[in-house]
Length: 355
Ligand code: PMP
Image (cartoon, rainbow, N blue to C red; front, side, top):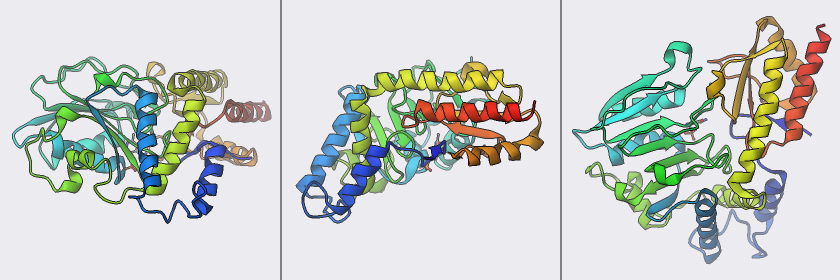
């Protein structure tokens, strides 16, 4: 058995893979594959409805929000957010916490004026900036709740009176959030929601057409909302597998229950990183992510040796992103405590080998 610590696309529960593969052969005893049915069929309409209902239930989405299943990844949202929310003469505020936040701001700049309210670029994004000012005349404030590459996470929504947009690609559904505090939440599915190919958007309906721009319909949130995510052919299989995964999460006790597990998993791993003299964490302790755990070695020459041992022990995907180096263990919802223990055991074994 492999322990998959990949950052995304990433581990999903085994039972989801099994059910998904069955549906590729025969979907709900229809004698047809999920891959060949019409997206307009009654059967698939039920899938979209249930997926939407599960998102609503698991995240307690209040009235007045639309739940959309779009394509183009979180990267398409980097453009759709300003196209829909930023008026010609408006200004958007962005918090710069790393590659994805920077890219989001860079795309917004092609559309209008952007103010970077704070950045942790001075220390290779190893912390979350605090005590910055968000201009009250901004059309919206954008931040990234979990920085997949650097292993930092924003646990408290920054306080501001302006509409708040958050990229939750790598921590959505991993912990409870109060959706009513946000105006727009988006997330590429390929971490905790499902396979790549679908992007979740939860948008407050009063944001539709906020920018006053004339938009091609494919980039217009309202066009997708009006069509119930069927403005064009949706990513049928990705939505279906997301539904299976959300069912799994609900059966496990939902977001509140998985959050408790995620807290324990992260604690076990960070405790070992702090204890083991060969390793050290790269993120500021108070901003440590519960999803992506980044760490390096005091002696970088030994890193290749640890990676080789990890491979022997069936640990997959722990090489760090090139901009941080070292290691990154992504410990998403579907990764079990036994996989965490396998990594911790390997770190101890490495320590013993070098006594
Ligand atoms: N935002 C975050 C926080 C991410 O982790 C990623 C991808 N890893 C992206 C945005 C980009 O997502 P996509 O590839 O779906 O466009």
